[in-house]
Amino acid sequence: MLVEINVANFRSFKEQQTFSLVKGKGDELLNQNVFTATANKDIALLNSAAIYGPNASGKSNFLVALQCMRRIVLDSSNNSKRGDKLPVTPFKLSKENRALPSEFEVTFIIDHVRYQYGFAATENRVIEEWLFAYPKGRAQRWLGRSWRDKSQTYDWELGSHLQGERQLWQKSTRDNALFLSTAVQLNSEQLQPLYDWFNNTLRFANVGGWNANFTASLCEMTNGKSQKSKILAFLKAADLNIDDVLVERRNFDSNELPQDMPDSMRDMIARDFSGKQVLDVKTVHKDSSGENVVFDFDEESDGTQKLFSFAGPWLDSLEKGHVLFIDELHDNLHPKLVQFLVSLFHSKEINLKNAQLVFTTHETSILNQDVFRRDQIWFCEKDKNSASALFPLTDFSPRKGRENLELAYLSGRYGAVPFLGSLEK
Figure 1 (tube, rainbow, N blue to C red):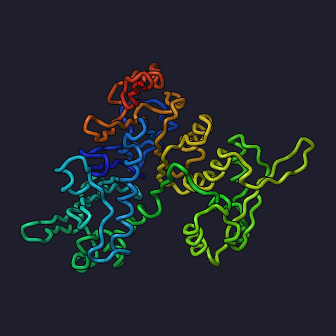
Figure 2 (tube, rainbow, N blue to C red; figure 1 turned 90 degrees about the horizontal axis):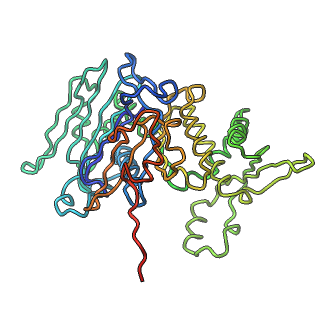
């Protein structure tokens, strides 16, 4: 479960920006959009949040920052070598910031225990790394690591609550790797759940969403079981008139690739998929006489293809309690379908594992207090120096249940809208 994210000096974010899924003061939609996350119920979290803002405001960069953090956690020890560059990009429009590290911090909850983990890094090395745990609400410092330029060494603080071969993990941690990742690679059972949270719980989809393969695979019979009925129920609930889904596996054939595809791309795809199987998806509709008619998947509309591709990952996230980030959820989807997708995360009957959804969008029809609490709406915009700022709707103290959020946003009251000029000859 995600509590808070802090990002500083990464891409368009110059100063530290904080994004929170902690419930605010309001008591609206408590039984739909809010859940308690710890055993003593001292932290109430939100099931979703929407981020609005003009194009090029930094909304996508916020998601990229968390993706970058995840990539470093998962890869810095396992797949990198000494001297490999870390994939960080500081704010480039400031000479001072170009020389400073990018900073990432996430607060999350695993098995009712809150953890606060973060690091600062340049492309050459990790500058700082820290980890706090809060069992029973009390802070325990498990890890502190800080680079000292003068001595060209790290100052280390490994707390007594951190169990295992601490000295071995410290000595094995390279400058361009994280202690967390290194310790897990060297069999730290205590830190494994934190690594698994980044690896398994944190999920992303970009503007294009997913391809259809995962949803199609759920429609197949595996070990005598299939989730096709759940997929079809999802599609019917979304008002897609699909009566059945047919999935076949066949060997990849490079001759089926488009003839106008560049040779270099054709060769790369042929090499990557050589000897592998691909899924062939067909949909079934009933004609006016009630007979089944089979369609190739690419005969469906872009919106239908996208929603079908969403179905599997969406249901999987709800079933397993993922923290799901989506960039531009509205793309190729009707506003009512966007509201339908969000409503699944707000349903206590469906979202049994308290999965969370964070998405960027331009779709304002759902920007209302019947769908969201006021603390679930965020905005992103750039200042005169092209630095992105992330801020919540609650900064503007909108009136509970009375203020028309969509109208106020589009009229510019909250900022985060494009400033359009005239096209002069």
